[in-house]
Each structure stands twice: as structure tokens, then as C-alpha cells.
Image 1: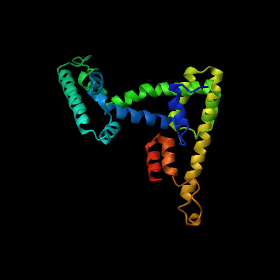
Image 2: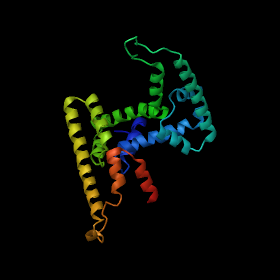
Image 3: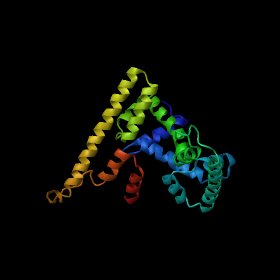
Image 4: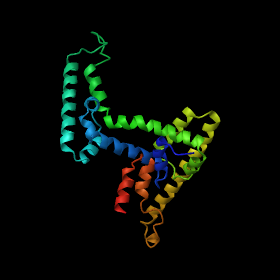
Length: 245
């Protein structure tokens, strides 16, 4: 099938030699979202309205700091804090709902706002909107493109989180028979490569035994960061490994 604009990120991710191409795909989205947030866009009213409202989670705040745009970050933080102060002040004056003399309130506007703010992030939201479309495209490519099926089957599997994401998306948009095949291929791919990972970790452990100290490392030297990608989807660890190499 001829490559289209919306298939390029998927094909690029599956071309990378990594433990989870879905993690690689998401990492590109994350980097792009961070750069977008600290680029000229932060001066646009509609973008600032969203960042003021949602704020950022701690990991993405650190990534924004690493962009080294102190003026831009100061402006974004100033208007976000102004918005937060205004909302909290407004909700302090709002009564809790559903309460009575003998019954606790079931709704507290101030606490609900704080809880929502603590679980919102402009960058997470931006990634999520595109990531869902990417997952859908992966499944549709598997369904319609024979060349991609081959590429899919030859990758090194997926992290546990993205195994679940792929199976959910497959179940949602494939027929019953197509999904059964997709589930079988995807799960076997996951298990085969997780067993490979377990073997690499076992050999890594063996290398700390004096009996094996003169044996080659085989593929085990970077087993820990690769295993963490498999279990936790932390692809930045692989980025560091490449820098060190």
C-alpha cells in the first residue's frame, strides 16, 4: 500500500529497532507536544486558554523546564496561576451540595476543582487525542496492508500497557474473526519477546557469578533498561542508553 501522510508516523516507529514501537511512537508525540507548548504557540490566546485551565503534570513540567525558555514558561505559569487563583476564590464561596443537618455533603465544588486540576495536563491531553488515532491506524494497517503485517510480526513486541491498548483497539474496530487473528499474533509476539527479555535478564544475573565472569555478555548488557521499557513503557531509558553508546 502506498504510504500516506497519516501512516508515516506508524511506519517510522515500526522501523526503529526498539522494545516497543508504540512507546517510540508516543515518545515522538510527547516531544512534539512539549516543543509546541514552548514554541510560538504559547502566545496564541486559544492555546493559552487551555494551558491556563489544565496546567501540567510533574513529568511534563520538567520537560518544559528542559526546553530552556524561561520567559515563555514564566508567562505560561503566571496566567495559569491567575486562572487557578480566580477559580479557587470563586469556589470557596460556593456551598457544598447534597448535605443536610444529618448528612454529609456529597459534592464540594472547591475539592472537585482541586482534584480535577491535580489530574489534568495540557500535554497529556494533546498526546492522548493524537495517540488514539495512531493506535487505530496501526490496527487498520494490520488489517489492510500485507507489507505492514510482515513488519508488525517482525518487531520486538510491545510493553504491557501498549499490548492492552492494541487489543482494545483491535476488538473495537475488527470483525470477530479478524480480531481473533490479531489477538493471537499480537499476544504471541508479546510473549515471545518477553521470554527473550527474561533470558537476557537471567544472563545478566549470571554475569555477577564468578563462574561466568569471563563469558561474553551476549545481549544482556543493557537488559535492565530494555526490561523496564517492556514492563513500564519508559522509553526515555532507551534514549539514554543510545546516548551512552
